[in-house]
Length: 248
Ligand code: ATP
Ligand code: MG
Image (cartoon, rainbow, N blue to C red; front, side):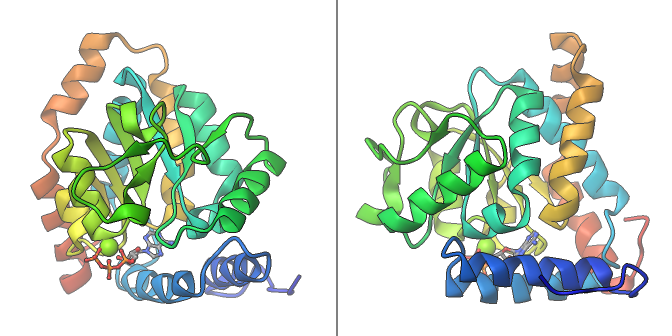
């Protein structure tokens, strides 16, 4: 453990970086994950390292989508597992979603380590190891999913997802919620609900919204979903990044 004083102006950013490092040491995060983290940090810096209003609104819509789904799945990769393992378990509990481990560089060992790590944080049924389903249009290893998980989901949360797979999942007709700090990434662009925010802030905020919406009628959830415009959200995030307009 390293010691970062909470008073440090960039406390959260340093803590995040440390969690990713620890993830690599534990064998749950890949070396590629370090590079992805660096890209994310740069965008977060430009966003002011805070949840902008348009991202908060998208997080509420994401919560509504997860609650309204027939079968929602939260996809977890090595960065997600390192950064927000307990928070993902909380979101799954609040929305009734399944959790599935899904890796860009898939190895049996890393899959199992991540599943164990999620169980250490309160996860019970962790999917992803069956790999008896396929996403059409992707090469063999990247196409693998669980048939009773992402394979049959109508709504999927794919944080920090690779652009190719995000596009392929959307083409399968799944409603895709993407968390990605880069509003220009293909992943964010292909999402029904792009959430341009740090996963560290986004996942707990989705859980808070889900708890608040838990008693809502189906019609009310449908209205929240219907009113949302993904284009507008991406434009607002880009505006915040370019102009520092945090009302975006
Ligand atoms: P593509 O256009 O194919 O998506 P890419 O450069 O986005 O290419 P990825 O591997 O998808 O490649 O990159 C990871 C993405 O995750 C980046 O867009 C980065 O901004 C984002 N990211 C990294 N860390 C975080 C984080 N903590 N929270 C949210 N997003 C993050
Ligand atoms: Mg991407």
